[in-house]
Length: 334
Image 1 (cartoon, rainbow, N blue to C red):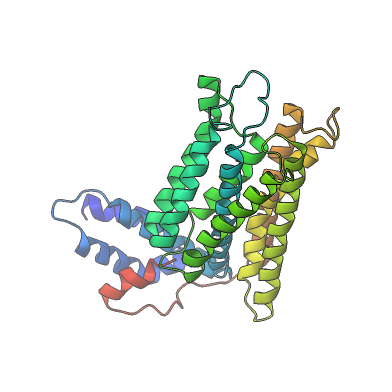
Image 2 (image 1 turned 135 degrees about the vertical axis):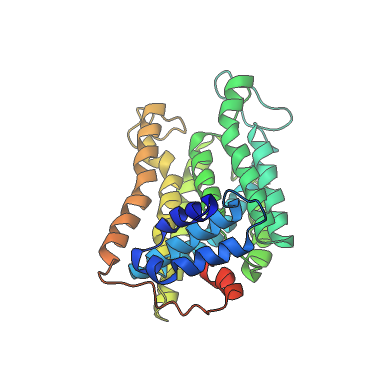
């Protein structure tokens, strides 16, 4: 047995034991046939494929095979929501409000957030032109720039978007990285509509003094309303799909609970602030509620997964074809 074969066999531990016994030799044989001469380690692509295939089979064995399509559905909704928020904040950046504390504007924009929001709009263009890997790369870049706004602000002294704006955007972006493979009409059409619609609405409200910008009280009122809208969309999806005996919407709703709760973070923290009714919130309260609401979705999702697991599941009845060319395309798909 070669070192490469041993390493592939170790990777097979991600599969259920019954499935390894039934299909393990076939999977390893396929990987070895496709390996390059002199290759000593599994390629990153093979590792990804094996891990994804193993997760799929474990979910199937536990009776949770509809969880992955539900996560994919949540990722599409998350991308639409992240695009809409980015368009709103991009427009808001063009009308800086009074600086908070010692942090000056990044003239002529309100904050460093302008860079991140621009990256999100570039990701929206990528989603329209080439959904799939290109979009995920663009989303990853936008997500990294959103996170980077915090340390960059500390280093440069320039203003940045508040944490109660950045946190839900980061969560939505992380979910958007789980977009399904292939071209989806909903992504191609929905993402540009979300950007244009949300950005146009924000511009109209700002021009009519109905929306003041990042740090105003109107923002604190807007975010919970946006979270309520996102929750309503998730519940409507769950109800509509459940009528057709499709559980994807239920799983998507559970996954989206975290960004929904984070959008109400400022309001929750403000309820215990000594400056109640003011857009100013104590950092300690904000941080505490950020941790609590960020754990809400994962905890509920874990409880539901545990409750839904059924004993005695078997991943062998997957209907894989016998020829090796189809094994790689079908077995690793998730």
